[in-house]
Length: 153
Image 1 (spheres, one colour):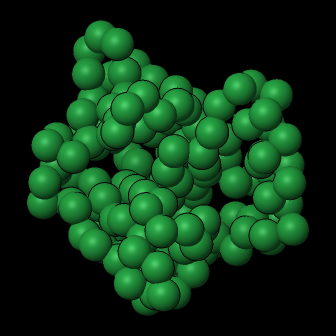
Image 2 (tube, one colour):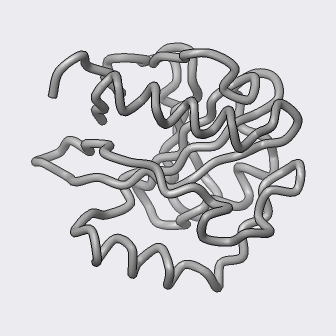
Image 3 (cartoon, helix red, strand yellow):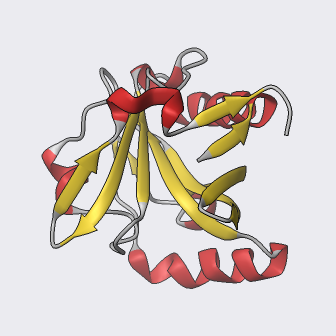
């Protein structure tokens, strides 16, 4: 997975602003797949799709997914991952594990600590791959080997 550094900074600033320093925020990471790599190009915030989704924890109404797919078609992009903030560290909660945003094998969920209060880079964020049937693989320790934030491209 890869993201331009300025795009990643903008995404984290957006998450921080929507967190208000007191609640989780998040969104779908839109982009393209090139070969086996997911290229992150933009954030579609959860509360831009479901205005009632940020309630301290994130409670996203799945009936709004048609809005996500329509936006992807309109922009000729796809959901390449999702991201959300936590008040403390970047470990997955039981709720995160039980409720993947897209319950499809291979979907990636990122978790940014401390309500995205600063720039966090790979190695400082949680990186989790959904394996199906409630199982996840934790790629967090792989850091930039799995998720590259690049100055160019």
